[in-house]
Image (cartoon, rainbow, N blue to C red):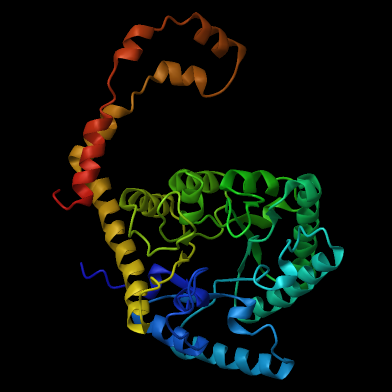
Length: 387
């Protein structure tokens, strides 16, 4: 297999990903950025399906109306010329100093109103470029000092803003769904909705919860010491996986946005397997960037690497599903009992009585070895290429 990406693989990158200029909190930029049309052209040549953007990745926050229209016209022409699409868009509510103490959750009502204005304009821009999913990453929605910010108030303001924007989208007649992107910390000390589970809980409190899902990110769940695979599975189980961000991360570090599969190959394998086996049909978005050490050539090597690794792991997932020894180990691991499963599948007073009256061999249950060491080594062998 050549592992050459094709449009139908639905691989996407953000303008902010390949456009990252290598700045970090301790160092100045190490490379120049690219124009949006050039990034569209280059990614298309590499086999990508589309590009995503924050409003100000494309249109500078200080641009005039005429400048905005010129930039958008050139960008849309580049999309058309290169057979690329914009599946997702979002708003930058974290860079400008106005949002230093929150956007939707700011204690300053003027900031909250400005955040809504900025987001409505960004939604218009995203829809104009073809976006059907709109992501909210609340990078400044949280706190450094809890004494100044009652989290109940903050969550109420957050809810008001999302409810408002849902109604705005419906009023405009847009075909657009929202996805909340959880993250535990950085740039704020504590960010609201830090995990997939907390985002799902918040969504249930909205006026129109069916319109809002989640956009889990590999690095963010890993930063919290959680399993990204389990978080994605929870989103799929809830019917809420509206978008996904793939990258990599060393646990316990700052948000690194490393090339997908570059550190945690086993979780990456099971992420790919879960997406493919579940029938997920959305974009595979790489929210990552090249190492700060790299020049322009290194940026495109990074982009190719993300897609190549996904395709390699997709092949490994297919091999996992067809490997007779792995499947035999899985079959041995799962113990069926038609009678007991019949009792426990749905409640009735008769089923409850049957379960209470059943005699279980507790000691035997505890003595059974499920064979996880053997199964896990088979996975390691698979990843290391010896199967």
